[in-house]
Length: 261
Image 1: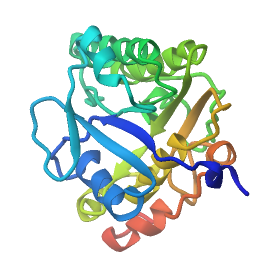
Image 2: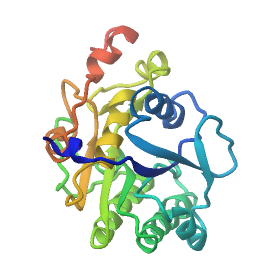
Image 3: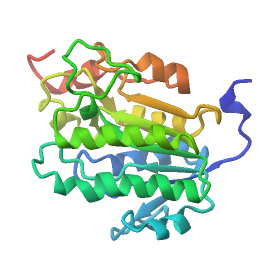
Image 4: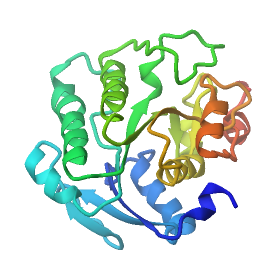
């Protein structure tokens, strides 16, 4: 019997950052995959701020308020934090301090105080974009960000290791996420396909991280599909959490672009 089959309970999971409404935002497409494949495999609650979300269990959450986060987190097994400022082009570091630095500390510290067993954080491909194309960057390779946004994601990865002394912590280096709905727009806009992450592969990656063995205390996971060329080493992630990506970014985008593949 594999470790996935040994769980006889549904883990209570709180996920933040799912209320985006842009065409290619993670939130709506992630919830679509959860409803199709994972609703019977873990018990999802969505953390919301102001945006209402019908059809799912929700709880009000304020990532700037540490004390309220502690109370909100109590009773959950896993916290998945996908919230933050995702503008990799910003030249104003102040725009990133509250959502990406302070909120990161608050999530980790609140999780420790609330006896959360596992925290899964959204890092980014931008934490390692200083490596040249053709690389196969692994979880033990040092971060090499090229912008302020990437530097905040490197901070998240570092804090993940700090708090792995108290709980299990994974950081997912999310690549170029493309939802099913955004294929026709997002694929032609890309100049490379080496770190594309599909909608269904991301949902699987989060699920496998949620139910990974309890004794796995720290990992930097490759948020990438099974692309023909891969900028990140997904073999480590496959081995650690039994990730089995189904999509290849090159094949996925081929019907939507001309002359690039």
